[in-house]
Figure 1 (cartoon, helix red, strand yellow):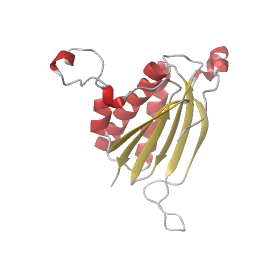
Figure 2: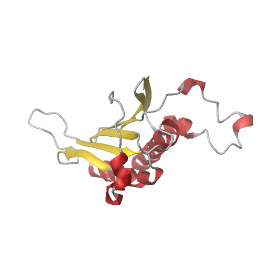
Figure 3: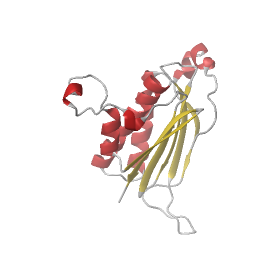
Figure 4: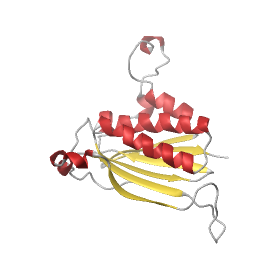
Length: 177
């Protein structure tokens, strides 16, 4: 899990071409359940670091869709993952980092045909996930916001929050076939 402090991304604002996500590393083995010589299932790892700009969620979406397709998740499961990851990344940008582009969102993902796990880390002050208002409460039904965490929990098999002095991270897990 990410435990470092936020680094400045001022250079993203200076170079328009650099506004695309800064890809720290993409590596992986072949997809579709191939195994390594030691018998362990191969997987694909994706790591992205982006400034807190909501416009960059489309690029994250594209990469996650590519990753889950490559590793053989069915269309319905891919859809669940895509919605949950998009919501979590938007939460990190909007609520965690307050759209401050000098603060980064760090995304680290491991995907194989059996497992999709992603860590999304922001530099925000944190929140109490158990203290959020229940969006199903009649007083909250007509509010425009407040359903994201509930939706993420409904779509993923496991959702874990880790709040530290360096920021908040959420780990989303979905099991495959």
